Amino acid sequence: MTLQFIELSPQEYAAFESKHLLGTYTQSILQYELLLKNGHHPYLLGVKENEQVIAGSLVVTESTRFGQAFLFDRGPLLDFNDLNLLSFFVKEAKKYAKKHGILYIEWAPNVTYVKTDNTGQFMQETNDEFLKKLSREGFEHQPFEFGMSTNSSPAWEYVKPISGLTDEKSILKSYTKNVQYYLKKNKQFGIQLRQLDKNDLPDFKKLTATTAKRLNYHDKDLSFYEMLYDIYGNDATFMFAELNFEKYISEETEKIQELNQKLDKIQQKIVKYPLQDKFKRQFAEFNDQKQQHIKRIAKATEQMNKAGRPTVVIAGALFIQQPQEMTYLYSGTYEEYMDYYGPYQIQHEMIKKAVAGNIDHYNFYGISGHFDGTDGVFRFKTAFSGYARQLVGRFILPVHPLKYRLYRLLKHITGRV
Image (cartoon, rainbow, N blue to C red):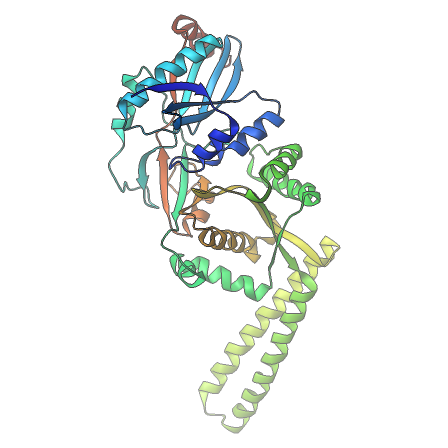
């Protein structure tokens, strides 16, 4: 076996990553282009055998006071069961890093440590063998992480397998009853979805910034969304769910008129048959429905007056499409419009798109990894029925061991380096 460790051309790497089972958007050629445009200096490293690419990775540099690090975010992409290939990649990547003055290498492979159900119960054995493989290659496994972050790939994800779904009927059947109910409500409310153009991105940023402030997390800059829009093109979908108050109020008014007709007929029966309690029960039931529609009109009228316009954005989200998966990346919801269930309709639309594109997995992306009910994002995602996935985590390979130990010591003392 003649192996060659080289820098890959963008064309070579793109063809390889798009077909690899472990491929994901953070390892895609479009992410490489986004990093370049954002002022980074990424690398496309790989291994060839007889001129065929058999392993590869997008690598990003990160600066510390003691030098730079090579970060393999959800990489590398290789057959980890091929121990000869793994050892060769590690040895050559370390030599390459040393030539470039790199302090350490960090891998965060797109490999599952364990899958769990919605309560946190393991669905399989933990993948401790993978940790041992990398340990034998000189890597130090970092402590498992929990919680959410917008600055790095999540340590925990929620994934819905969709390869067995074929049409909207099967998709709807795969959800929990709650989602099916919310989608019916979306139809009643007349929620409309709109895919955004680039000139809509300031409104998208306003939505995500408002949500980030409410939930206390860091949002991306508008320039990031604009660059992503330009580079990812059709592989990125920015979507809004919108409500037209005038149309909604008009439809609610029509429902009240229909109920009034029913109530008039039932009232006539009550007068004619005063001892028949079933007519009184019917009247009470339809009158309750009427009162609900009246409340909705009052609420919508108040919201429209406050908004100062007939149509409002209630929710929005950004998705990245890969051959391997559809990833739900960033989103926002205006708190005052949560009762219209806009996020559910957005997710349903994108799941339909993924199924139509013959994509096997729908990745709801980050969750905290806590199953104690404190993660509201997790509760939302579980309603679509999938599984939680803990990744194997981060692995550090020192390139200059003595310098790296000093770096870690100072980082421990100061809390930053």
